[in-house]
Amino acid sequence: MALLGSLLKSGIRLTNAVRLRKFNALRQQRKAFRKLIQKAQFTRFGTTYHFNELLRAVEFGNDREFYEKFKQYVPIHDYNKMFDGWWKQTLAGEKNITWPGRVKYFALSSGTSEAATKYIPVTKSMSKAIRRTSIRQILTLGKYQNLPGTLYEKGFLMLGGSTNLNARQGHYEGDLSGITASQIPFWFQRFYKPGRDIAQERDWAVKLDEITEQAGNWDIGYIVGVPAWIQLLMEKIIARYQVKTIHDVWPNLMVFGHGGVSFEPYRAGFEKLLAHPITYIETYLASEGFIAYQTHPNAEGMQLVLNNGLFFEFIPFNEQNFSPDGELVEKPQTLMIDEVEEGKEYALLLSTCSGAWRYLIGDTVRFVDIKRAEIVITGRTKHFLSLCGEHLSVDNMNKAIEMVSEELGISIREFTVAGVTHGTLFAHHWYVGTDDKVDADDLRDRIDARLKELNDDYAVERRHALKDITVTVLPTKTFYNWMESRGKMGGQHKFPRVLKKGLIQEWEAFLSK
Image 1 (cartoon, rainbow, N blue to C red):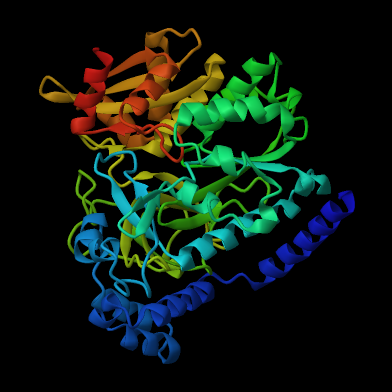
Image 2 (cartoon, rainbow, N blue to C red):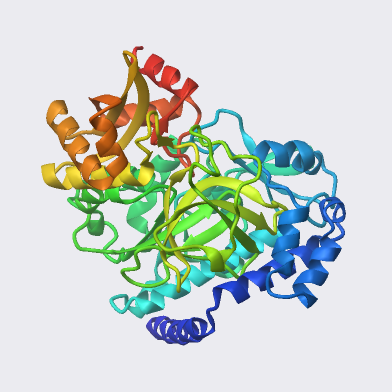
């Protein structure tokens, strides 16, 4: 088996070297676009929006003709427009609506800001694309010289939603993590944990308990999941086996593949559970597709998946394209991969092999390396605070929390911020989740100071319209209890970093109980 690991690692290095030489972002995106349009040209959506002409343009036109026509023919869709106009028919069992054939699986998603459940189609083509990208992500481990070949012989723990999907009117529904885990290829079954039986468990608390009881029987080398839930699981395992660190149970744990939220607020508390450093690989897997992942050690960002069933467009995230509430204007500026600029923030539009077309996913990103097409997630189009022009992003919040946690030597596991009125002006109310002892006023002053350093607009407005900052310190469990009360425990669910509209009242009512 050690020989197998060494051979795998050698092959991985060769594969990575070949891939690096071939990388060309625009060429890959043009190829991805052609495949998508060719596949969907005879669907109802494709015939409505002249995909036959788009296919001719991408095959025979000049470099930009296909994109200009794409923008001209196909309108931008948010979820409601996509669902009401098209996916509702797909959900009802009709075939060939926005993608060929009948869709068998739907990922249930409400994001972090909306109560209503979204039904995102997951086609066979998308399932294959996610598997291909997942394998590519594993292959990138060959670039990490500190990882031995034996890693490829260890268990891979994937902590996600139930694989026991809900059957409804001819299709199956569930978390994307549950859908993908239910389709793991046979050759990977011997490595996959928690295994088929535990993976089917729908009760999140029961699932964590069952994993905890079995943890001592597994040799885990790689874990994947949302940081909050992985940290909670490791704490349960450490307590159950009465040890000091997770490495006392899993001595060969070497890699954590994380996604869903920024890892930085969790890092300090997470690393207290380890006996020695491990490798972190960031991923960007949404219900709409596997969008990006970290491809090399010490990368600042994640490389977009440009050649596997996704076509990207980018809307500059500014006042010309979005309202103060994060609503998209009627005719925004949209760009292709070769038109973006490093350091600028963009909202993502996706066209995918699940039949999403010019779909506003709701995330915002910033390019940190144009040559490698690497991005960092900065937040959501509606998850930012700009009550009076402070333009405070989730990225700013995460960095401030990370800096303050390090200064105070504490672990802040969760936080959220609400914009509120302050007389005729405005204020921010922070709710910070930590189980360490901390003075709320000191925490407030430090967060405020760091945000002033990170964001010039915030610093200006703190002298004018943004008159007050309040910090309420809560036990971490309070955040998880609220999520449980809303039926959002586990899987890909995470606590919203910004509370707006009805969520503020719902959260405050929960706290007052």
